Length: 272
Image (cartoon, rainbow, N blue to C red; front, side, top):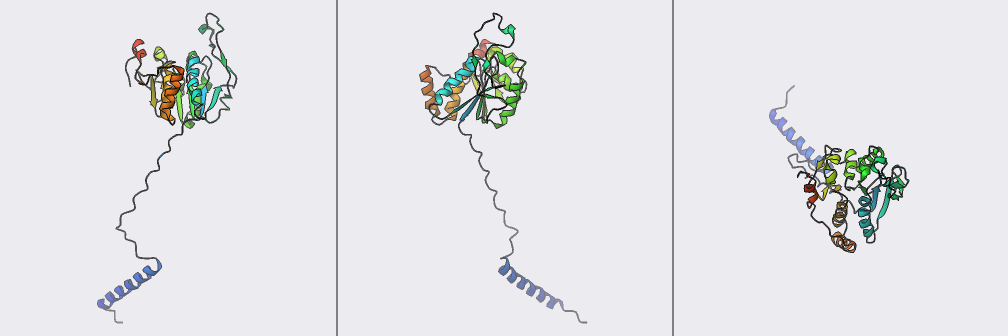
């Protein structure tokens, strides 16, 4: 049998390739150009900015400091006349909470000068919150804070913002939610509270500190200036609203977060 010559084989290959290219153009279009660059990746979708907080919860541990709660509450109540807000007052069992210390040694004169504040919800029945305020006071040093600490730990991931006032930072620190974050607290109680959060980046001097979704204030009245700054930054027309509320309260705002003479007074060194 006579084999085809190489010359005839070459023509056969060319003819076959010609027919395949015609079929490809009719059936599926031209063969892909494998040397072409891949299309650029789609841009990342920007993360939505949290909306201004509407539902604000205030934790009420026993023996809380009155001004830690009612200072910011006065300011946010005034804000509620400008925009819709919801207030949630939280106690461990839904009952009213007294500011009287549980330890009689902390009331050595047997005073009866302790108001009780009604709660709207128990910790177990707490609704979803945009902002949670954790106050301080003598109760922040209590060994009986397990339910409150557990609640802060559980709620933190669903919050847009957490605000601690004064020694309330100690409750949040025990919950572990301040670990790795910058925060501050009352300078008169510095050693006691900072020991509750060895992994926290405690800041001094500081009237208040903002670290992402976590805001913390120094002692008691610093909660007023934190609340004004929070409103200024997080609500539409916030600067004008904060100025208006402060003027009606006749309060001179501290607008520099580093303005903190109490650090020097109580011998707290500069850090973070």
